[in-house]
Length: 170
Image (cartoon, rainbow, N blue to C red; front, side):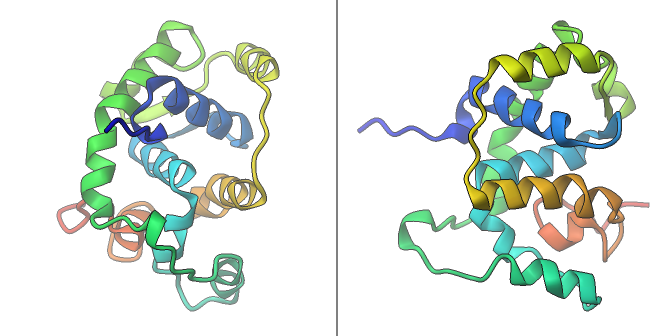
């Protein structure tokens, strides 16, 4: 049986990253942070599993994503799935750097930097973007709230999502 999963489709990965970069207010972001954001764009219902803090704004954001049990969307091991997406994400970033949209040194610097915002907007305008309400909410939260959240440490984005190892971060 053949099944399709957009997480393992290079073109869909490029699409998700373009959407994220377009909605991002800043011109650069950590490579790993963008990979985590891409995971939640591919699986927006997984945002329910993020550990939110106790601040009032954390509680408000958590209310936007009530837990729903759907047996058809159950992911047994999110971390393993996140790691399986890595080669597709790397290929997508490489493709975008070859188009001149992002800086080619993303892999060595650990940051994805938009080098040509006009070209990014031009490509996005050619794509018919129709996001569902849930995806739109996830996109807004990822590119604003999660952008300002610490990335490293026991209360950082890596720890809250539990998608990658954070215990050995400096």
